[in-house]
Length: 158
Image (cartoon, rainbow, N blue to C red):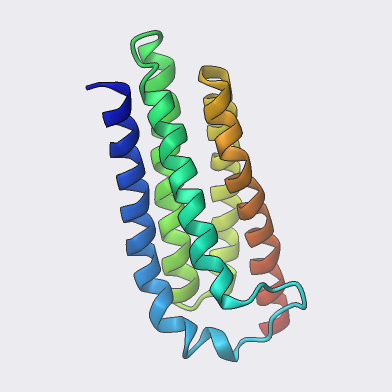
């Protein structure tokens, strides 16, 4: 498989995970989420979809670039992609916990673990491919912001 096929495969995978995660979000936005007390720094709802779309594109590109390096160090690349897959699963799980189950506290506990695995993924990607590492930075910043937002929403609605 060539570099561009790997990148396209990973972008498609990330966008599909994002789409499926969005299904949990969609129904709760207009009903449950709108009723929650939110901090003053809470972005308007329309911001989330375009931001996440760009982040999933960056994640897909980053993971495709890392996958493309598998011929250089198979063990290191596989390990990095395993961390990537786990954090991507935790990304999807967070949407289910927060919006599907409407459990802000459980989502908060989960996003802490998610954030730690994302940070480790960033470190692993950076060692394999500098551009892949840079592509993960906006995602890491956004999840950091989402963690603070999640904590604030939990605190205001406990």
